[in-house]
Amino acid sequence: MPFLLRYDLDRSRPRAGAAFKDLLVRAIAPGVLVFLAIYGFGLALIGPMQSWSTAEEPISKDLESHRTSLWNSITMVWSHIGNTEYVIGFCVLMMLLVWWRTREWWFAVVPGIAIALQASIFVAATNLTDRPRPEVSKLDPAPPTSSYPSGHVGASTALYLTLAFMAHRIDNVVLRRVVQVVCVLIPLLVSYARLYRGMHHAIDVAVGLLNGIVCAVLAWLWLRRKEARSS
Image (cartoon, rainbow, N blue to C red):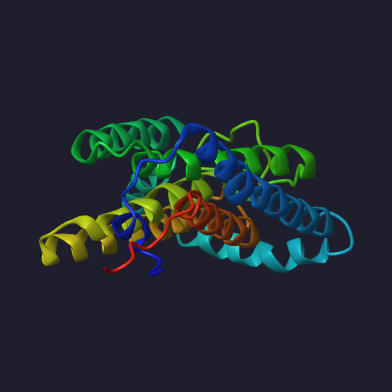
């Protein structure tokens, strides 16, 4: 079944029990494996691969040395896009909008599943690894979580990538392409902003991106769908 068309080719309403089972088997269980991989890599970063932090530090230092008031202001906006309150608020708004337009709750909840999955993996991994942030001046208030992985990047990636998937239903081709490009671009802007503003190492951002991408894909595939048989 084509990846983007799975909710179009089968628009049948799932039963609650079957949907819950699919959520456990197809999203939550793989999410546990993703967490173990991210956590394991995090332990390596603060252990036998600790020298990587020394190798990453020049990147943060170089970005710090090239800061300007203009880019400080621009990246502040980009960084705030990934704030928890904005991500959750926009996610809820989009789920309500999609549900109102489609009346397909199983389709509307996809961004919520992606955000919840990403957040669970991020919170567990960041608290257990406790990696220090870069040794540069911080332009944002440092949250209580550690540097690894980036929660801002993971959350924005999980949210906007699922919205890019969902945007294939927009009939107007130009509008559809614009929405999809913007949705893909936003996590990249957030990633650069978090690096520029001294909040994360490069690896923290890369793993945050990976976490968001994987969670978006798992959320998109959370429900079993079947192609309608041609008569």
